[in-house]
Structures are given as C-alpha cells and as structure tokens.
Amino acid sequence: MNTDLSLNEIQQKVDNWIKAYGVRYFGELTNMVLLTEEVGELARIVARTYGEQSFKESDKDKNLSDEMADILWVLVCLANQTGVNLTEAFQQNLQKKTNRDATRHLENDKLK
Image (cartoon, rainbow, N blue to C red; front, side):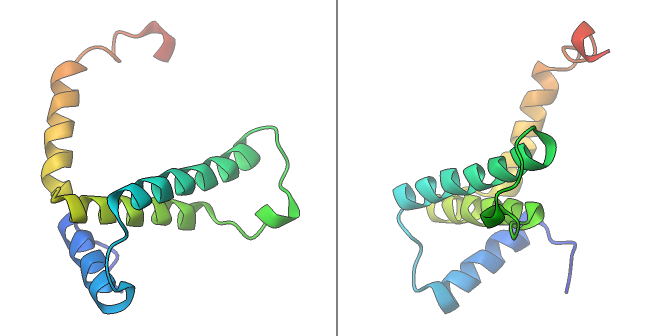
C-alpha cells in the first residue's frame, strides 16, 4: 500500500471509491453534518486521552487515527462534490498564513 499519497491522489481515490461502492455522494448538507459528527468523535477521544475525562466502555474501541481519517474522508467528499482542488486550496491557504503571520507568532510572548 502506498502511504505517500498527494492530496490530488486522495481526492481521486475517494471519487473512485464513491463511484464503485458508494453509488453517489451524499448531498453537501449531509456531508457537512457528517463532518461535524466526525469532528465530535475526534474531540471525544482527545478529551478522554489528553483531558480529565475517563473513557466510557463504549469509547474504548475508538481510534484517534481512524477518526482523523474519517474527517479527511468527508472533507475530501465535500471538496470533490464542490469542485475544490485541495492541493491548490492548501497552497493558497499556506501562502495567506505566511503573509499574514510572518512575525505574529514569533513575537507572541505567550508562545515563548
């Protein structure tokens, strides 16, 4: 299994899977709700792993990396169905952050 996939390759793999097994993409609103649900599941694991809450029996089979992958999956579905190229979007976003925050974090005393 190739573990070094580009975002473009990931988008293509998800699209191929949807066409082969998923029948069609869920609607954008449904996928937005599913994305929110998946983020909540990740938050639950993080809260119990790194926070003060203890795991419930029903939480013990949950996996941090699997929940992150679920989030990526739904995000890629949303990107595919709305025509967003995640590679281009990420590169533009990184440039925006670099321009905006070139010295902001370096000068933040809270981070020193």
